[in-house]
Image (cartoon, rainbow, N blue to C red; front, side, top):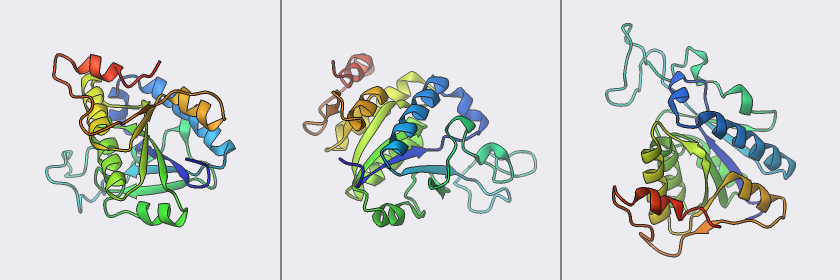
Length: 221
């Protein structure tokens, strides 16, 4: 991984009200802001996805929740809910990719942009871990990008769902590397760092009873 073939991909860090229900969202945003700063210093492209639902309800996913006017409740294109949060907002030169389904790749320009930038390695974070993050990470793997998941700048509505989704990616994206944000920052700065790297399929099998212990193995000490 180097700055010439790496991009930071941030999933759906938007003003949508439901984002406030993400466990640890303030910490996620703080750590994301620090990582963005270092990526900009290192000339690593920063790409944001935005999830959108058309205000006229055309093209919505099956059973997308609607309000009394028949308009989407979430990510309504006629509201500020679709904008990137101020703390991590894009700067000139950053890239925004709009999407209408969970995966950042589904019928969007993301793959085309990454190929144009000669990107081979993705640094992925954002929300929700068990929905748009895992969908995008899996689609990246299907397209032969090497995935680096920054697990502590990902989150969802429950800790268990975040852990389970992260472990699913660890088990089935065979060349994945999983970082904590501070360790990825160290790597980008040329300092000593720690990372969890997959050694084979289904390496971290877990049950409801062992979920937390399995997840703890992703933090290398």
